[in-house]
Amino acid sequence: MASILIENHSLKPFRQRVLGTYVLIEESLRQLAEHGSELRAATQADQRERPTTLPAGWRETLQAAGTRHFLPMQHEPFTSASSGSAETHWTGHAAPAADVPQYGVEPTITLHRPRAYWVPATKTDVIDVLRAHGIQFETITAPRTVEVDMLRLPDAQTAAGPPAEGRTRVNAGTPVRMHRQEWMPAGSIRVPTDQPLGDLAVIMLDPQSEDSLLAWGFFNEILQRVEYADGYVMAPLADRMLAEDPALKREFEARLAADPTFAADPDARLQWFYARSAYVDARYLLYPVGIEP
Image 1 (cartoon, rainbow, N blue to C red):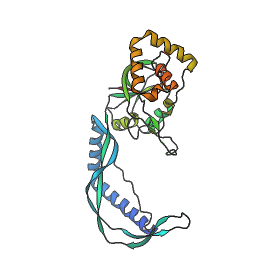
Image 2: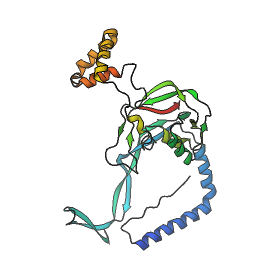
Image 3: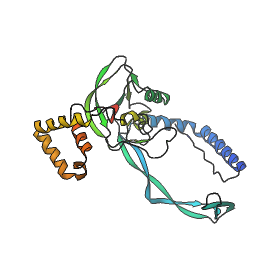
Image 4: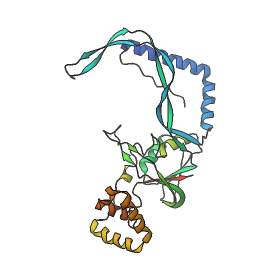
């Protein structure tokens, strides 16, 4: 659906800002009256599109895409007694016009469109957000085991600094994909991407997207390790693993030789064995949304 975001410059007089908003809305309504059928047709065509890939992250281009004729305002620096540093004073008078470079954006992340996503019933907040956005989904009434791809996020990190809009942001990093059978309890949902808002479903449910629900802190529980093994338990078990598995022993010795920091860290060494034991927390850093490729 087409939309317009109106932003008025804070340095413009209030009357001018109100008038500018009024004129823009008036002209938008006039254009809608004259070309409403064309806009409706374009919207319907867009809703029928099912692109196989979607851009989900952006950066500014290094090269300017062109120039824009700009009418700047005069400004002058001054030293502020309160901040103790140089600040900018805008005079309200026109400065000489200038042609300034205008940069574009290019994608940094490209997502592949799957057939569907499976969201477990335990993620009620995620299901509520999808419903509020108008995304269509099917709800299962009995438990089901499904064949899906799952993503483990070994590089996932919370963002530094204060929360954004009340949520701690998360960077998914590079996921590790695996195919597995996943048990979904009753109340879980299947979100097909073959629907008018399928693109939005991909953007929200693929954890690599900059605006995914994972990025907005809806899955932070997977970042917390809830299972572990103390050294007095892990050390004897690791010694048995070394004695009983020659391939594991060779892998461990190669890691010791290649990584002196690892070799000098007893906790890291035991954690290495714990990650390869039968007692490792299989859900740690596992994104709980299943993917139908």
